[in-house]
Length: 157
Image (tube, rainbow, N blue to C red; front, side, top):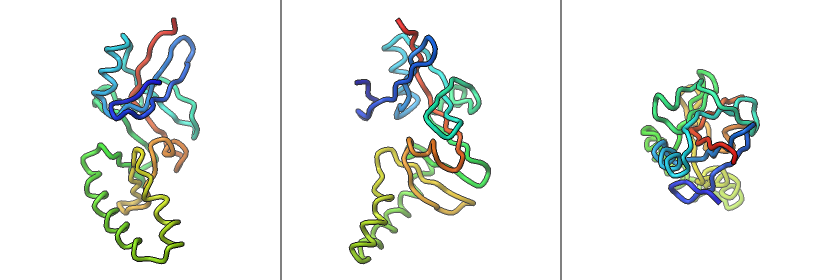
């Protein structure tokens, strides 16, 4: 099983004559994997609301040295846990979590389900206001989003 720098499982896709890995925790993590496997860094787009990747260069992740980007239109921003602005929203989430812990148990259980999604947290902002927290994987299916990830492409043997 292949893992990223945080020992999280990488996603493996077979596209034509290549194998592509995604799910890297940083651009540098992908670079290291590419060097180890004699692979090539590529941008992978998930643009049809499901898990059908295609190699592209629409978000220019390679030029920007980014590992993840979501485009869901002008009203939405997806802020990954590795993004500099994430800390601001994480502090707000802690306040919300503290408030929920004072609520009735049944309400607390339902509300914490979303906030406790810490696998690879993404804060969703709509029109500059906090909307929700989701995971990197689930962001592929939300808001008609186009999700772009850095990947490592390796020729099939």
